[in-house]
Image (cartoon, rainbow, N blue to C red; front, side, top):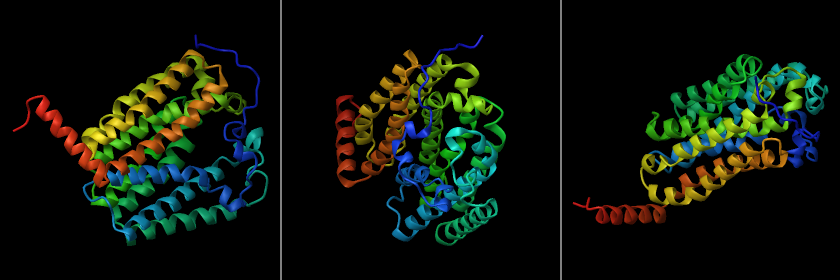
Length: 330
């Protein structure tokens, strides 16, 4: 029998998690592009680039990669809003969105999505390479078709499998830098895949009532908060375990990254364990949701900083001392 836990009746809207959402009203065409999701996708794209020997990229290629990625992510957001228009209309927290409220028509939204997709493809093919363009479009299709259409309404493991869409940007970054996807790109892909469930299930704990009201089988709805809390802690530990492999996958600067990532990992584990012990505390779930975003931003920033001359020199000296201390020096 699924574990259950009574939760105190509190506000469950997204504005309770990200207060600025209730104060900032975007133009309808921009709102349906979900611009708040794009910066983190671009950050992981940069992380994928930093894991290649070709970092830093030439400015035109860097701009085309990030611009194409942003356009494709916006197109995916529009298509997601189109597909879930009826669902959003039936949920109290989403009924005021641009499409269900009638502030933009479906035909206009579809035209916008097509234009954004075409612009992204052309920019990436002309300014980067075909592999980066193909992977970007694969990410778009994975989010719209695999996650939104197939998995989200059918299984409580939707975000575990569907997280592949959000994990593709590191592959795009690696492909843009070198023309192929190397070990570093695949490592960051795996890290984002493992990071996604704990991040999203923390939000799902806050929005459990909303998902239940429209029959979306998110894990807290199907298995209850106790099971969800334990799952969050497991994925937090898995994320931390995989994160340390960045020491080995970075072409240079690994020791700097390995040292600086420790406080990030410690805080993620602390918050994940807190949610496991008390999944009914919405403040803990909210805190984990917010920190998980900062965590991934922080790791990508560390990857970029690790490729600076100072960090690479520090890492070289550190590894040299370790080899001498362990008798491995030539």
